[in-house]
Amino acid sequence: MRTSYLYVLALAVGGADQASKLIVTTRLPFGSSAPLFGGPIYIAPVRNPGGAFGLLESWAGLLMVVTVAVVVAIIFLIRRGVPLHPLVGTALALQLGGALGNLIDRVRFGYVLDFIDLRVWPVFNIADSAITIGFFLLLGYLIFCDKAVSKAKTESSRPGSGTTKE
Image 1 (cartoon, rainbow, N blue to C red):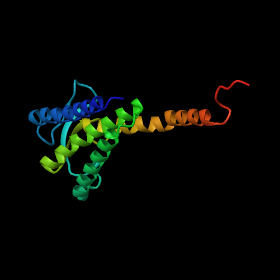
Image 2: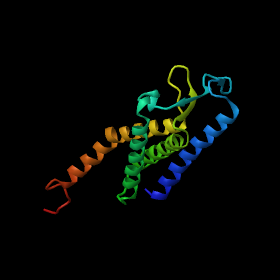
Image 3: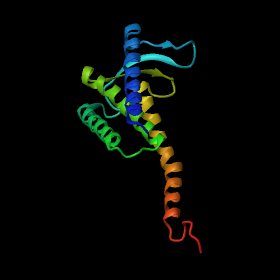
Image 4: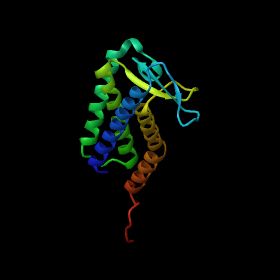
């Protein structure tokens, strides 16, 4: 998988996250809510100084350090030059873009702007969605693909598993 694709995807996610937040904050004040296309999704900008679901609010500094460490780790994994399975590469790119989108908020404002409100789930944003989708892609790879790849490698490395003439 080409690393340029991974970086483009990460930048697209981070850019979409930041653009959506800019649009929301210029159209709706904090604390307000508006239905999106009259459906079950509402746009409700809120400040989230904590992590996912507003947890760890008093640990904002640690969250920033952890986010930077995650960004560096993902970039290191991508730059290693080891071929990545498409699911793994896409998952890492989504997580990188999401982490960057939320990190920009933390650095600029000291909080993350969340605005997608389903009314049955804590308010979140595009970056959070990308991180979550990336997590489930990695989980899917580990459950389904990694076992198949490991099994194929094990079977091909067994003595007598190659094609030999007798």
